[in-house]
Length: 136
Image 1: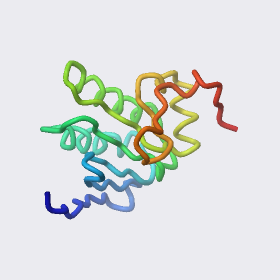
Image 2: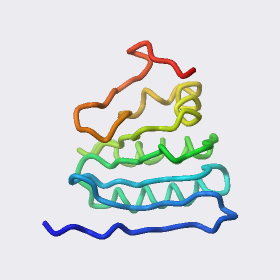
Image 3: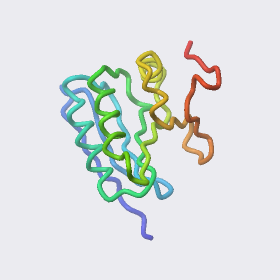
Image 4: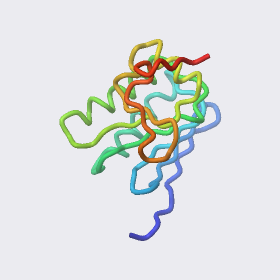
């Protein structure tokens, strides 16, 4: 299959977030940077929906570059997971930044997602707290 050029969707600087859709090692990936809050969560939701359409498992959202995540961002992630329920497609959270990981853990939704700490296949953890890991 020929290499695909990533689609880049950057919101305005005032919005505080950028989104890039790409394919890595046969996986659909949404790379998110910046702040996910009430102003940017609707765009995150739209990007996740677009990435999920016609996807084969998994759909990956890379949150390594996200500096802030509030309840509206959590809602967008949970909605994407729910939309994929009943299909063979899973939602994977890739390398959440320390503040994002903390928010996911403190809100109790970290167990809803497969969380990968690296892009290497087989390195995923299904539930970070199950392994006694904490964020310092």
